Length: 372
Image (cartoon, rainbow, N blue to C red; front, side, top):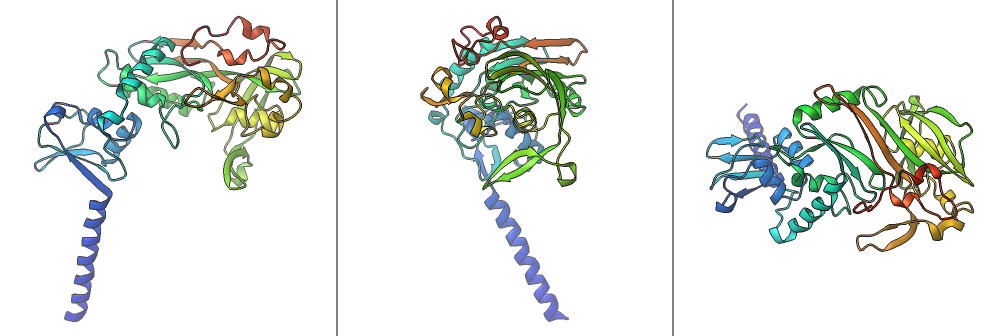
């Protein structure tokens, strides 16, 4: 009847207004003026919004970042902006003032870190990431590898892309793709699992020694709560754990410590750290997340004066030893089919004591590497 129709119509109007209000509140826009005319949409976003290149690409794919020119919407990141265009983006992103972006500081850091590029061809870059530098941005992270990638375009039309990540406190080889096609190539290989077409090896100093000189750990992992914090732990497949396999070999033993070579055949979060601490019962030196009791115990404490501590943004040591986990090498086939193997020198903090020296490390230590 008419009364019912009126109620339904009114409800429909309310829902439409709510939808419009939600869209308005969930997005913002900025008008393009002369200084930004001619810029690519993706590079404008990278330079003017509080986001990194990875997030820019994600927002473009999701249709949450675009420009409008009259009735036309420009959704391709390579679109050139003109005066009067309006760029639309999520409301939770902030427009960053030029003075706050520290462009000069990023450029200087990118220049310093360029000496740590170990390999570069038309498709890939392999970079020796220093410990303490995050791969991507996040809470309480001032700068990350993703932030400096726009400075490493070289002759390419776009910055290199992250195709995998290393924990902030893990040093070593980090593979970057220089195009969408080369990134997709590596992504497809990583889906097959490490140890097949792509082989990554890590070196780690652990407290104690595994029961055998070499072996394989195949124990599933998954998230678990430790008080009010979430950590990764061994977790049965039946409880939601995911398959995780790590091969290990003892390279050298010194006193209560061992130098291990670790080869992950799967790529689970914190896989090497949890397998060492919870399965082999040999936590990685400096791993307070998964081996705090051991780090504060009698085997580590006597050496604390000789251990290289983690440092804050001002370069001050917090007294805790750095994580002794290093992505030593990566082997992969390039987009063109060439096999490439790249090895990163061991960071200086691995040589943590004059009285406890691994001879294997002595000839592989990094010399004068920036930010190491």
